[in-house]
Image (cartoon, rainbow, N blue to C red; front, side, top):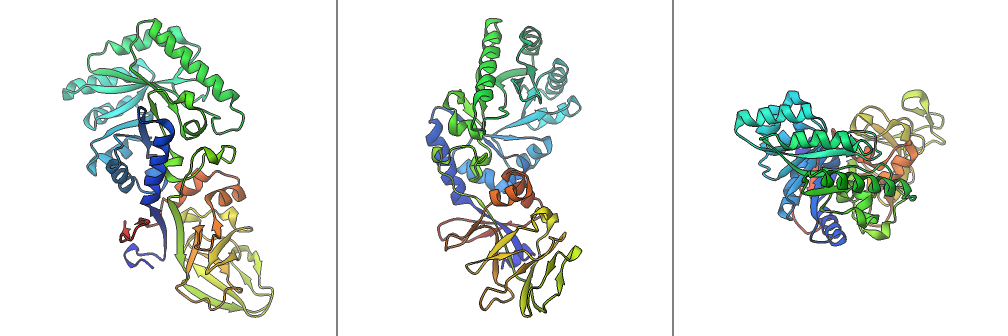
Length: 390
């Protein structure tokens, strides 16, 4: 139990595993590719500041986030690296873009002009990335409107306080076994880039590779790659080939039993009376983890945890802040015993983010991000370094 965390449930973040994943990604893409570490959503629930510090020590020079507030958090914590915002930041916040040395995504003249004016007021030059929509349908100049895009990008390139550094896009289905649509997007991206070059627009670099394409589409690596979920040891989907990249999970979720009771046959547990004790002497443990902590309520009917080398089923519905576990089959179970909610024990028993996601109709990304919202985090290494509570 970690007293300083102020809770009997925590997310355990393994920084040694982060370094392992980073090394393997670098080995995969080659030393000549810039690695843009995606640490948005508080580093996928792992804590952006300690993650950034570890990546910095391992030579990462560019981070990618999704919001201006994430940039501010990193800058105030001392981050000097390049920081890219992958989404659109409205011109209303142009002063902050310039002030915090953001590299924003741009795909309209109006937005670029607002940033240019703000940069001029502060005596700065803002580097930007041009977004192109190759089939994600989200942000960026459409791949098939090259003439209009070239006219606008030429106008943006003339702005005195703007420097265009990169062209980027994003895959919609690179994590699928069928790569045909990803290949079509890549073709569109290359055609768009060529059209800009033919028009005389100089865009020094290109990036399109996300986690899945880092693993399986080497032709997409270009000048820089943008690994996200694979940094944290999770595969983008169950359709990618895990033999392409060895990973170790950076996050486990653990708790301590805070209460034990014995039920009589027919006693019920939890909201909706979804669990009924099958016999006298049924043992129910309570832990202080609920759906407000990211433990999805739809997981209740099939959920299980690990206690002292035994799988134990959830007993009844997951509550907002607590859940109950049937620990009848765990010998000598007691208050304070550790419960592995997500992770692996020393005997190889495991409950993975994918297990929870598959049972609740979502993806592993959502599970790990949700666990990162309210749980205290404890940072550990595989060596004998002391844990650091955050």
